[in-house]
Image (tube, rainbow, N blue to C red; front, side, top):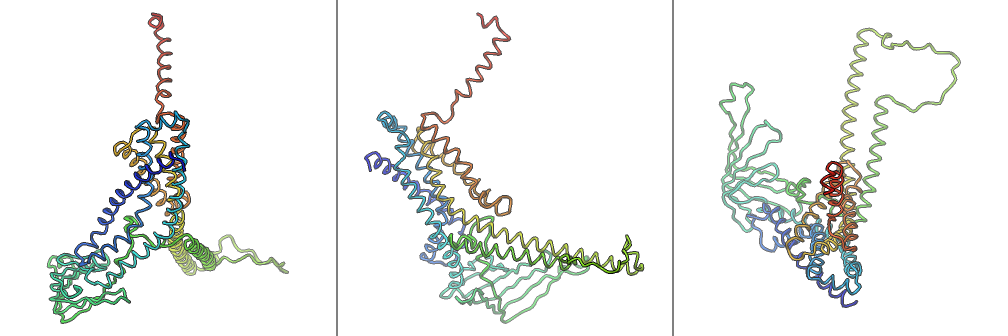
Length: 484
């Protein structure tokens, strides 16, 4: 390795490491903000909180790594151009491609590491993260319920005045609001003097044993005039047991993307195996439904034609004319019922098939994303390096503006493509690679212009035709003034 390559690699590594650490810290703060409700006021010691954050950190890498490469490239090459180091290189016969050669090798190695990380570390971390959330809720039942405030746990809102005991499982002053399944159902409130949380690591059910309490439930009268009286039912109890499903704590919200779904826990080989099973299951479901619906509507395979010895009497043009009025009514009712039943069956099966196809699309997107992150490192380098050489600005001013704009565009297109492909609007391949396909021409254009020492925008190419047009108009309509 020559002195120039060592110098450029050292400069880039220092900038890249600094930017990566700063961005990683910022995204960690965002993760803490997303899960602040699960960490604050839950009696968790420092070790559990650190483990919680460690298992959530790897999911940040696909966002931080490309942005770090982009910003470090702009800052490194911008500083070199601003300090006229590139001018000295070019006067010595060293082109931009030659200066980038050593860093291209480093980015290639970084892309391989990024793919390995996305294929091995992130799935393992997602698996540990999901199970860790469930296990700490089972090992520490008090985590599910905060002191002095209402905690949303499953189908209940629970508030306790005080928690005591070794694990905080002894509760004093318990108030529970049971959430109705449907709007308009009766509202239930349970108040107890004290209670106790009982859990087992082998079960996801948390038992809440209440002592000396009252049970209130609103009653909705059938008569409208009686509703103003607000009647309710009240009952006292010495002991009552409520079972709370802790699996509610691990439910996934796809819109917020706070917890990764199961496809994020699989590597490439496991995703391919799962996709093969999902596709076979979908094909079998389609074939089974087709045969079932054909039997229900009376469609059979065409039998082999057999020549009849005697000619059959042709059917009338209106087959219903062969029946009485009552029989016609019964036949039409039966036909209408069959049509309604078949339509409902088709709509239900269609929804199930769409859900299964959506699940397949999500797994395909997760598969392609592991390759997209590796290519994104290359793409961001070939955008950032020539862009820094063109704008000739280093530091944390203008480079950050360009880096944020480019990365927001990349991330927005990537998110939009994934969402659209998961809903079937386009193929998962196009949805995952859309951002790379859109920004690749920009990388080629910037590299070409930086190699030829052209600016970011050639204003002469825009202003010259306009000035020539005005010159021709002036010569045609004001010839006397042009002669003077």
